[in-house]
Length: 113
Image (cartoon, rainbow, N blue to C red; front, side, top):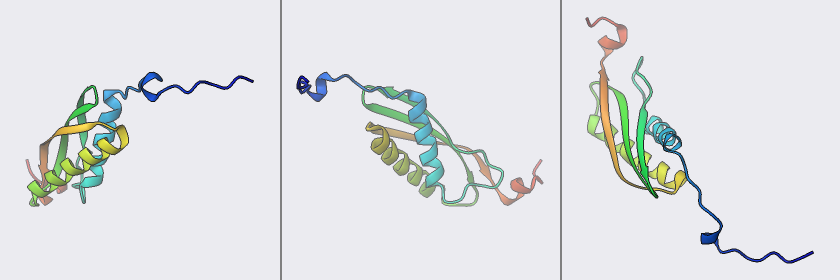
């Protein structure tokens, strides 16, 4: 039995993680960051652009109102960047959070026209 040569890590090949996989990681991280999603709200969704080992992320969320919108957006940015970095091994220089809709108690009950 011949002894296998040791191949350096850089010569073994590469791993490419698809944009849609990174987007799923980002959307799940946004769900984790939101303390309590609004009743009747859609779950967060994400769009990602990956270039080499760098991911730019845009996350769309629906939030309850009134609440600390800025604080929730900061929590989403922080959690998304951390999870993408740890799970996909990518730098995340930008996480843009877009608030798609605000839900009040009256919109949750359906009484706003």
